[in-house]
Image 1: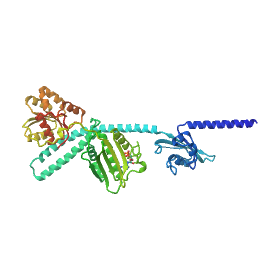
Image 2 (image 1 turned 60 degrees about the vertical axis):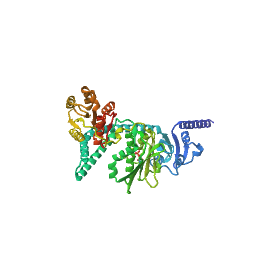
Image 3 (image 1 turned 90 degrees about the vertical axis):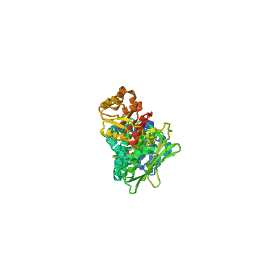
Image 4 (image 1 turned 30 degrees about the vertical axis):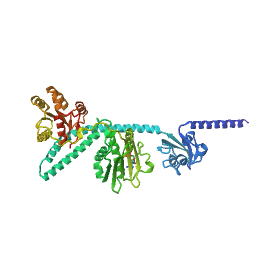
Length: 522
Ligand code: ADP
């Protein structure tokens, strides 16, 4: 009787313990399943049922891969498969496309008395928030690093622009002058080659400056076609050396949009580099096609390659942080994620699709932002206008080449030109002689152009209306602010004859020009 009572009480204890254990397991946020060797679900906690949205009776006995992923065989990455081999606890962390969550999946073996795996406890912990926070932190770090690199490139570019543009100004100005002269045909050809070569260098330096400029407004009116052209030019060498044929269909009447040009260049660069890499091992003629068009109230750019395309099973994950199919050294899996962030921030959309029998296409759509600014008068070609009457011009530039080039150019146009590389000497000359125009370099070692401009006020305030700045350094924030405040016209080195003469004419004719910083070397 006593033993019977004891066994009833033990049974009650056991039942109570089992019920308490069930409560503990059900109270967990983790999804917990007991899986047998043939992947059948033997038991599942509340968390699992909530995830599946089903009743316990329906799930028990079903294969786990079928219940969780509607698959017909065990998932490749399943840690239980591994546990059956190692007889140890195995774990894996991965993104689950069915539930759109990141899970840490752990398989703990339940062994029989011989040490063989009978079943396992499979627990799945939702780590989406942790992964997203880590990804966000890494992305921020990546952006910070990129930002630092851009600042460094910007500083190098500013120095380089100045150093390269000074000698280049002489080459461009003199070759343009020669081209306008009556010289033998064979010499003309040589001069044209010099001019074309120098112009290409101007373009390269200019693009570097555009890409690296840190002081540019965050967003500005921009032409997507120009950004595409610049980006392609930046990859010109790689595109050529990889034998890629580029075709562009750029809409001529494409409206502008408000954009951060550097960021859009970054997006396009990433897509183009991905396309280059995708086509790398292709034996057929590699083709990159870029199209721009206006579709309803959007500007659309489509970038297509004829590489292998994007496997259907990954197309939905391309824009996820750290998603890459490249090995560790060539891909971080952040390019498209950052691109997605940039385009979304611009109020646009980016997506990828496969073309039938062809490679991948990336489509970017941006909103059209109506432009209200007035047309820049310096963009209107007026090279053929009549020259104003002979004027007395003082050139102040520490570069002797530039003084010589300006002297020749302006003398040819019938002006009386004096040059000096010393700003102090220039101040003396100004107090002794009356000049109609001062061409002033902004960056000089002894006294910069801004200080010089302040000093001439002491000689005569009217002189300040007669200045045209010539500079290879408008990248500097100080110079840009100065030009903006004073409204002085400015020609960026290396300038072309037409551009220079246009600005000279404006000042000699007393036209109020507003701040004109012109980069063209037309
Ligand atoms: P990463 O280049 O570092 O891998 P991305 O975010 O730029 O990172 O790209 C993510 C993935 O998208 C690539 O690893 C690749 O699998 C796929 N992908 C991107 N562009 C293409 C393309 N043009 N063709 C095929 N797959 C592509």
